[in-house]
Structure formats: structure tokens, C-alpha cells
Length: 476
Image (cartoon, rainbow, N blue to C red):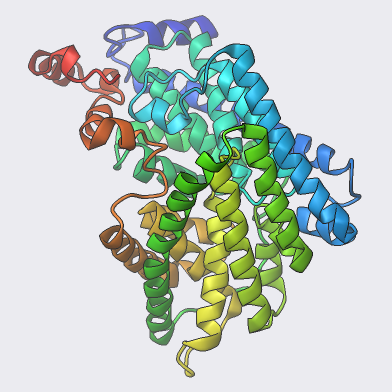
């Protein structure tokens, strides 16, 4: 199938027979998804390379914690302060230049939008985030990587002249590709889209999302980096005693997750009115992070180095608690200031700390105490408690380390954490990103029902169209 045929297939109003041979309309979509996967992997690596290049200006180390540790104390304060202010200045100037405050994020574009990510606002957001994360700001760079990959996929959708429903699916594929490229976790990337963005397992859509995630992972392995994201000691086979302890970790994460979300939301609401000028607001947050890093350099960055250190070496309980509290304050400052990025990786690291603390203080003495197991169970459990996506969380902590036995302990722990977390706080960390705060659950449900109507069988599409007036499902 050549390029022109692919574009025509996506433009068809009723593509149930795009080749005149009864071919399923998802076939050309799978080819587009493969292209999205390749492009998403390149976008993620471009962002990562740019970040390392900026870090090289002030340190000989790539990883931010090592860079912070190598700097004198005054530089640990100056670098994140400067990075925060510069990040805010870039966003402030960019918004004034394009005369548009913001563009939709990828979740909004899929759930309650038209699948189009405007180039200008998203490039400004990406550039602002790049400056911030390169200077040690305690925020996740992976969120911006996923957004950047989604932007690239949205541009591909425009090239293919995809209609609205296909454009939304293409952006969803881009999100999965970005997730897989950032975390080396294609299955978790697929479940991320299924559980959080699409709101359920829509099999016809997920086939394209899965293709995109797998191609992204294969591209990353072939061109940039092979192997798991984190190196960890093998986890021994899990027994029933370990499941009991995993339940304790899941319970602790389920109780702490809503508190963590409350801290992020409350600090955002109270901090931002104090500093209306964006560069000042982000600069003050950078200053706070710099001062905290004087105590422990592990405060810098998204937490990748901290997670790897947890998995490869022994930490004293007092040090774990100190890093846990300091990073908690730092990520709260960064999020409250509105510095572009994500909190997924910081949540993983916070959960890993929580798992270690529970492991040191509460676990049954007859359990098989594998430090890596409780680190990963804690990380997945807190992620499940804040995202309300237990399957994605459990599979993710397996994929980032390739420790298969982790799944047996992480699955029940993540379910427990997700149930408790959702009961104590109905909103997840992605509630606003999904547009639910503005449009409400009804809008989200309508978006899910119309994610890809053209992929439905023709008789079901026509029936659905006859029963639903287009204005009823239109989202502002």
C-alpha cells in the first residue's frame, strides 16, 4: 500500500471497504500506527539528547543527581533557580509571542478534543520543560516526552489528512509510543492509553495503539538503548507470605496516594496567586529545590538516579526517610509553580521510598525480604493509587526491570492501592489533563463513545448516527 492510498483510506467517510475488497478499515490505521511508533521514538530520543546536551554545559555528568553532587553548594542553588526562572521566561515570552495562552494536552485532544495539537503552544511548553528539567527541577521529563511524541503524531495525522476520529486515535498512538520510548515499556504504554486515556479496553482501537508502542520500543532498542530502563537484582519467586506483605505495601500506598494528590492540588491553588509573574513563580520554586538539594543532592531531577540507586545498593532507613520527605516537598514546589513536566516518575520514586520504609518497619519476619521486590511493589502501588490504573501500574514495574516475579506481588498490591485511593479521593492525578474538571464526566463518556466511530462496522455506525444527533456528542 503506497502513501497516497493510505491518505485516501483515512479520508473516507465510510471506510468499511477502502480497497474495494472488503478489507477491514483498521488495516491502513495499523500502518499509520507503525509510522507513529517510529516517529514517537525519535521524538523521545531527541528530547533526551537535548537535555543531556544542556546538562553538559555545567557538569561532566549526564545524570542530574551525579551532576548536583559534583557541584559546589552554591551552584546547587543557582542552577535550579536559574533553570526555573528561564523556564518561566520561555513560557511567558512564548505565550505573548503566539498570543495564545495554552494548547490542549494529548489527553484532552483524545478525550474531549478533535485530536489536533497546535504546534506553537506545544513547542513552547516542550522548550520550557526542557530548560527546567535540564536544570535539576524536581519534575518528570517523561510527561513532556509523551506530549512531544503526541505532537509529532498529530502532525502526521495532518499529513495524512485524517478525520477527527482518526486524528484522536493517532494522538493516542503517539502517547503510547512516547510512553514506550521513555520507559521501555510497550505493554504498560498500551495499558496507559487503555485505562487512563480511552477509559476502557476498546479492542479495535487498542490494536493500533499496541502496534505503535511496540514499534517505538523496537526502534528505541535498535537505535538508542537496549535492555530494561532500570537494572535490578533478580526477584526470587513470590510466596503467599510475600503476598501478605505486598498487601501491606498496597494499603500504605492507597492511604498515602490521596494525601499526595491533595498536597499537589492545594499547593497549586495557594502558591500560584502569590506570584503572578511566571518567571518569578518558577524561579522561586527552583530556589526552594536548590536549597533542599544542599541537604540531599537526590532532590534534583525526576528521580531516575534515585530509583536506580535504590535497586542496586542498600540504604539506611534514616536516609530513605530524608530523601522521601525532601523530594516530596520539592516535587510539590515544582508542580505548584506550573513548571511543565509530569509527576509519573516522581510518583514511582516516592512509592519506591514508601515501599522501602514499609519494608524496614512493618513486613512480617518470615517473608522473603527482597529489597527490589518491595521497591517495585511500592512504586507500582503508589502509581496505582494516584492514577487509578492498577493494570498499567503493575505491568509497568515489571517492564522497567524485566523482573517477572514482581507481577505476582504487584498486581494484588496495585488493586488494593487503586481501590482505596479511589474511595478516598475520586479524582486521579490525570483528572484535569483529561478535561474532566472543565467538561465533566458526561463529556468524557461522550468522547469515549466516539473515539473512532469510523472503525465500527458500517451497520453499527449508521445505527449509532441515526440515534445520536451530532450536536449531542460535540464537545466544546
